[in-house]
Length: 154
Image 1 (cartoon, rainbow, N blue to C red):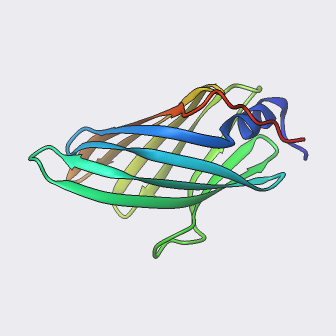
Image 2 (cartoon, helix red, strand yellow; image 1 turned 45 degrees about the horizontal axis):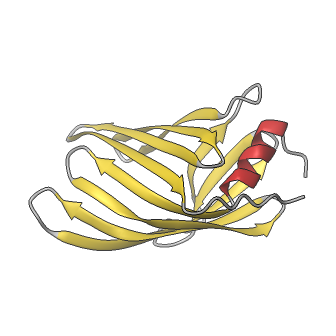
């Protein structure tokens, strides 16, 4: 595996089970769990399941599937469900073995500014600020490891 040392640590650190708390500024709070599973030495599958509690009291169950593809100092997060399956959602470039990266992408007229912050093998965050003609919201997703288990892949 030709990953930078920092990205190798992130790859190993993500494997396993996580609890999720996602605050969506103009909607509500999502809580659930996620699992990162090894496909090979460059890819992890990501599956999340949970419930969104909308501010006015409604609950909506949901899930997402992604592929995390690691190469060099880059993580590509690729949709693995829905109409965008196979498309890149985020393209994070980690510089100087820094444990955080930034990416901007567009969906129609909306701009998504995303930050990936790997604190340690027990917690990380993905923060997204969406700006558009009719949007201005922030999504902060906090991940906390479910167990103390830390699995290292060669």
